Image 1 (cartoon, helix red, strand yellow):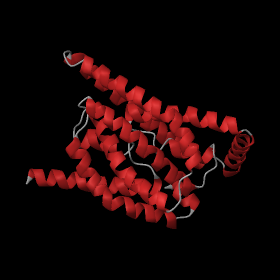
Image 2: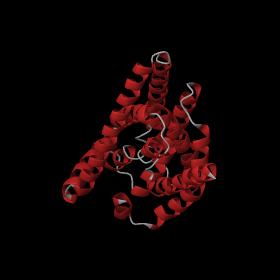
Image 3: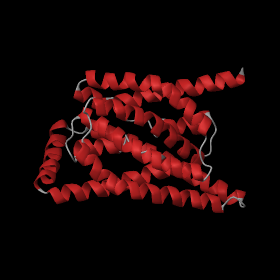
Image 4: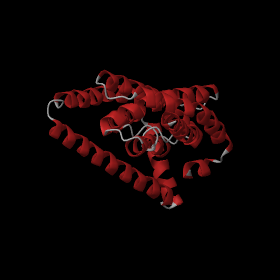
Length: 260
């Protein structure tokens, strides 16, 4: 009976977060990570690996739906991935290598896990503050700033590519280290810097995130920092939530979707 309730809890958690991913592109890390650590008692590194597995399994399904609906900006995604893929692999490998060197020193390993937990907590807090600021900043000021950035990007193709690769490397490193960034960090960047519509932004962030979380979870799996059972059960629940969220994103107005 305990096993049944554990499976049910993981499936329902995956469903709810999957709905968020399908509708907004957010949820692969910023919602999953606290759930894994707080609800299921995982260590931070195990939670990061499992969160990336869950995010991949759910985002790849959502990416398929968005690809069918033609809501992915392929060119910008390609530029982002040029910087994000190498950064993801390097950071994920470095973390797993370092954890492996601490297996014979429980105290050092505990300190490392605590430090990572604090860093992730601070990142989630800063991200939440940024989201609130981004939404509450004066609309006129935001539009003027966004228009200026977009104009600069459009006038200089080389600049657009360089910025996309640089930002991609930053997002890729965050995803590999914390599983946070594929939605909650990337989405504001795509809207503000490149001027994508909310729907195109959601589809593009999911497409980019599906690739980066696959690479990151693969590296974490080689370091035994991944709970396959939990990740798969939560993803099974997400298979119900993701398509519901994806359909909902097409029905909601742009500003409302950005607020959500």
